[in-house]
Image (tube, rainbow, N blue to C red):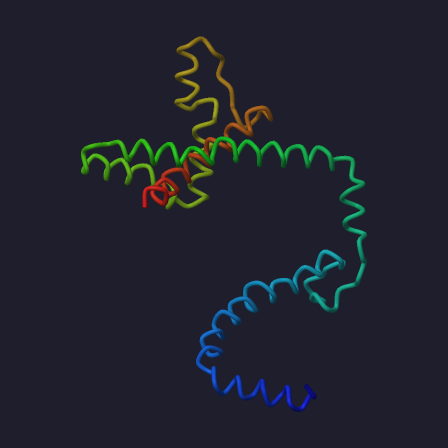
Length: 188
């Protein structure tokens, strides 16, 4: 086919199926706005970004930032911490809402089931600032957790002042805040 004939075929197809093309426009707009347009910001990683100069006006540095990151003496510690937190969250936070949904599903009384659902999904709607404040209160050396630990002969400890307690506190707080909401999604 000659180029002129191809364009006539395309125009004929466009006229015949214009309603299908019109229905595809919102999907195309979605992908352009939320998938391709944000990719423009990726070039910041290759620039010495200055908000005053903007993305285009900032100096191009290539892969300098990546070399600095990979050559940093803390690189392996950062990677280890990231993997430990990610794997711990995956292992413990992923099954928690499934187990909770199964437990809620086994409750025979409808009104009690609804009350349990309400109580377990409310932390999802608490502001993150409030959640962090609660975590600080619960993990301080004067918290109820430490009061209970003292009853069993343990010393009082401020959990967030010791690095070995950070991952368990992080995972438990994640489960507390998200398991209820996610269990409702599994129940649906």
